[in-house]
Length: 202
Image 1 (cartoon, one colour):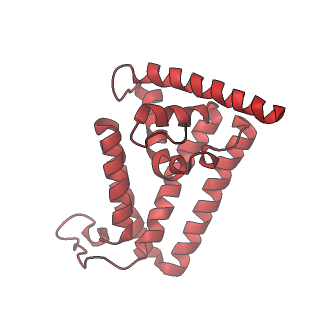
Image 2 (tube, rainbow, N blue to C red; image 1 turned 180 degrees about the vertical axis):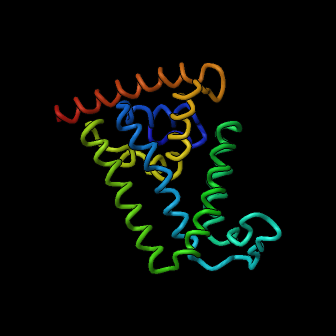
Image 3 (tube, rainbow, N blue to C red; image 1 turned 45 degrees about the vertical axis):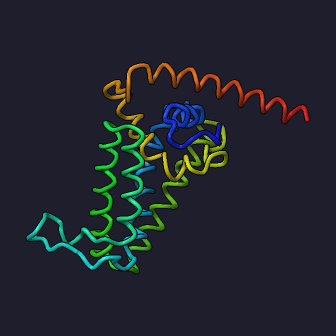
């Protein structure tokens, strides 16, 4: 399962879904995944511009915060990846990524390096702790990152957005997606249970 192509949306979302069945745990992830993404982008916002092209505020709104540093590289990779997964919801996720780029550069400039890193540290500790507790208390199983690191750092922001869109407006990337994913989730859960039995027997 973990070795499936990162561009296979059904398989990757089914893998995610098998680790996130409890609704409280899903809600915790909805709360904390994007703050983790923002905090990582803010870390990169303290790097020097790769191209000296900060835009003044009179050219574009918030132009002074559109700094082409490594935070831009990071969010651009995520944005293009999400669009490649799903042009519709992926475009919304890409827009959120770009908003995080502008926001994290604005906050980095406002707070400065010393205070900014304290905010980043608190955000990371609180967000990761919340997710680990969600898995331990409500999901009662280890997070997916132990089996698929890409899930935790590359796909999770899009997946929690997709959770919200599915719950709020029954969104599907294409007809039959939810049915196919549900079938794959059940297959994944069956395989996980079989692996657990084999480990106990060995």
